[in-house]
Image (cartoon, rainbow, N blue to C red; front, top):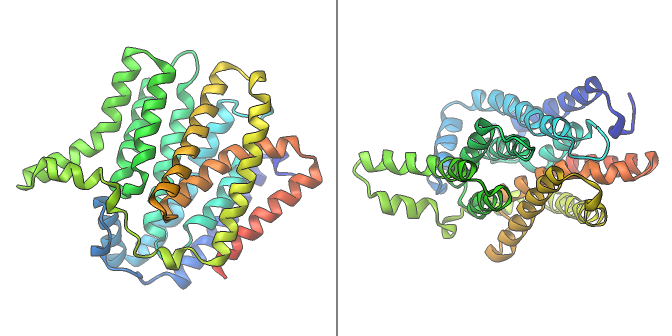
Length: 326
């Protein structure tokens, strides 16, 4: 197998992905099979449903975790290849997303975090197709639906769900795409509020309960932010800073469509970091979003490094990710 992941063939990247999937499933099946918290500790509606399903069907939860892990990695990394996000074509995103996902979702809250990873993968994996000369309406609408569903999973993702649609509207500035963006991002919350209204609840109060940052659940934060995971997060953030510096010095050499993609990714990262700073809590769902977005951008750094540096960076990331289960 080629050690330089920027030159991986698809078969090698797929083998790496399967190794991480097997490792993740093994850990959650052994260490986190039994739920650590009750359903009523979650504030968001989808989070309560996921927790209830885990309690009722623990074996199915582990099986679905494996499938969603595999799908999320392929959905997000596939888009990076198809849209020419990097100066050179590379499949490095598959291995990087697989490694960072292991370090962020393998915990007692793994069913909820893999759903967050799925929404991030769907949202950005589809959105990256929407910055060419001709936008594919179904990709834009489905990406916005994924963003709109994020507050239903964890209200900590509310700033991201608001900021990205606004950024897309400002970058595209067409009536059709503005309408698609607004409808897609508002649809999940509207459907949930309407269903609650049919159940004799207040539509307005339901909306406030979803779009309310003060309802962030911090029940499992102490168990999630272990010292090894904090080291892993610090390494990812440091590498992301290096990627940002490289992009800022080379952005004039890429096409306008590629610049728009990178602008959305950078804005999303800034919003997530600002959310952590304002809320004062490194919520697990925010960690998943940050590390996945960083993994999408990291190939830019690896393509600038030589083979030895690329190998060392990747090994450091993998070791830090695997260390979270210690």
